[in-house]
Amino acid sequence: MDTSQQLRAAWAGTSPVAVMGVHDGLGARLAEEAGFAALWASGLEISASAAVPDAGILTMTQMLDAATQIARASRLPVIADCDTGFGNSSNVIHMVKSYEAAGIAAVCIEDKRFPKLNSFVEGRQELAGKAEFVGKLMAAKSAQRGEHFVVIARTEALIAGHGLDEALERAEAYRRAGADAILVHSKAREPDEVLAFLERWQRRAPVVIVPTTYPRLTATQWKDSGADVVIYANQGLRASIRALETTFARIRADDGTAGVEGEIAPLARVFELQGMPALRADEARFLRGAKRARVVVPAGGDIDLPDDLAALLRDGGPRALLDLYGKRLVERQREAFRRAGVPELLLVGPFRGDEHAFEGVTLVPGEGPSMLDSIRAGLRRDAHDRELTSLLCYSDILLTPPVAAALLACEDEIAVLVDGSFRDSRRARRKRLDLVRLDEPLRRGERVLDPGRPRRVLNIGKHLAPDEAHAEFIGLAAFGPGGRALLLEACERWAAEPARRFGHAPSFAAATLTDALQELVDDGHVVTAVEQDRGWMEIHDFEDYRSAIEQLSRE
Ligand code: SPV
Ligand code: MG
Image 1 (cartoon, rainbow, N blue to C red):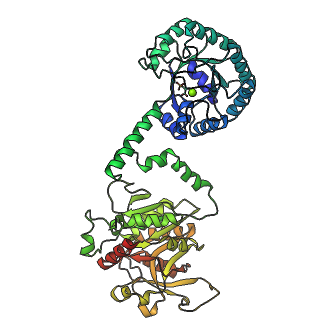
Image 2 (cartoon, rainbow, N blue to C red):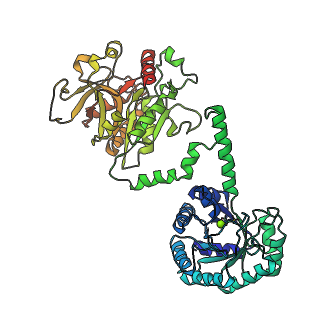
């Protein structure tokens, strides 16, 4: 059933057809969600949203663009307010062809002279000749392609003060000319003149009403009285004007937005209404070329927090929840990855509470307390996506978008980001770093034209002595679908033997990502090292924390 048939079926039924006036796609979505049966692409609303009077100022193309946007945003039939038809019968023919081709279910034209003035505005409410308007209706019906397309004839006889007899006479002439329904408009404060019209009309054709000034009756009462379609033409526009006025005034008065935050729709609602979930799903199915990736931050095993850092985490959460100059560490990670083209981040660990506590961050319960438990739980979510790269990022790393992008650019199945400058860093003297030995040293301090072949990791972990190592592991690794399957499969195997030693780790529970990577290397798999010497830092202890705050405060 197309939307024109849908509209015809609705008005032929026993319930009233409640139609909401809107002026854009967002309004259309909200009206559909609220349960209205159809949409009115209101000339008043469309003009008001462009801040021009409802007086035939906008062109047909502008009106059609708005109606098209409304039709695309929802599955409901759209009744387009086409004013006087944008000219004479020839313009009406062009209009019907254009609106029908745009997927509009119905057009409504009114018997006033061009340029019309909104019906509630005093003065200049001049009717067109009856014969002239009959010609326009015949032109409209002759121009439609589909048999169900709907043409509604609107008489302004009551608005222009010509009385009930004239309204009835015109409505009958328009019906005979082929109009599919009659809209009888009134600006009376009470429903009486419209009820009198309906009484005498005797359901000769479906009747549409716009009870803006006479709101006393319900749609059901109107249906019982003989009106099949009730248009609420401008209440949405008026509600949003009031909401904007109140919000804008409050922000001015408060000199900020803190006071209105609780009153306005959250951004997540905006994303939902504009179809972000559908876009994500489409990207997952169709996006080719750019690498698609998701970040997993394993927060399990993050238990050796120094007291001074632990004291900063009121709720005892992992390091990722540390507040760093107004934003949690994990939110800063999410921002960096997002700017590198990776929109989604899973924070996996022993959490309770809301899965979506932070925008763009999904909290996933770990499958156990250790880091490998968290990695396993996170990677399982990606396991069946053959196009997706999984990025594993330590929960204590603060990084910039170029660092994330550098790793993404590597095409290998397993890649780790390394920093060759570790020997110069004061951290090297006070910490046991995750160090890496490569199959060939990095060419530090030399100017080389040929980037050379990528280095392969031979050894990785805290057990390496600084003079055996060539670089430091930054805590960020990428696994393509094949690499991810290897790591997941290895984790499953290792979890089944909890007491086994892992290289330098005494058990599965104590093992970390570097122990897992070492096992993969020992099993003969290639782990590629990508070098990146700046744009990252770790928040391991209070001194790191202070240094990060200092740097962020300078940004
Ligand atoms: C509109 O919504 O543009 C209408 C209805 O035509 S009214 O404003 O009542 O004329
Ligand atoms: Mg109008």
